[in-house]
Length: 263
Image 1: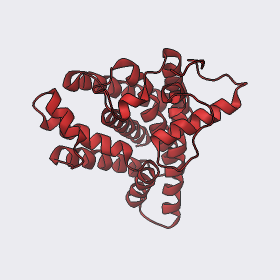
Image 2 (image 1 turned 30 degrees about the vertical axis):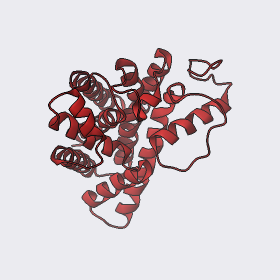
Image 3 (image 1 turned 45 degrees about the horizontal axis):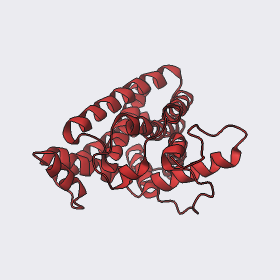
Image 4 (image 1 turned 90 degrees about the horizontal axis):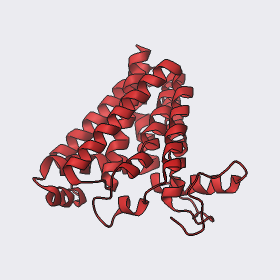
């Protein structure tokens, strides 16, 4: 934690710090070119803003979906375009993490071998299959929801919650290696991690309505707990790839639950 800085989320009176934390979180989670934040706070301290960045990504993806429908494209094509917009904004950061995690967990016989495979830039069979299922399930879910407004809500909720749980993962697990993107993130204080989860939950309930939102949040919570347990068993902690995989699983279950309520 940065010396002299608060371990709490910034107060309402600290509007400049809120914006700087949002920019710091956006720099980590997206490939949007932003100037470095002026306030010296670590990524762990800024991680309360993860769900806000996620909601912004979901909003952009939802706009892409609406434009595709306005051009008279079928819902399935519009869904893939929406997912493509999200990948464009993030640089495929989380999809890459999902693929590497699937390859490492599926292909390595022991911990060190799994970590070596996860660092390999090449993608294997497990990684390809994980991406196919992730993209296919999300696209099918969005296409089943169909309408612009409902898809927009599902995308905002899914992207917010998928990233909003990550600070809790950073608290629940130690880094699996001493270097890398995951280790650099640091360990947020409980107030920051739970603030992120709280913001994510509020966004999901607003975007999906009460009962669908609560159901989707329960599914995402279960997905996160299972992801944490799997990572602990496989490699004894988290890496940046594991964070990406947990984000993708949370995003996927949120979309699927929203689709189930829309049917």
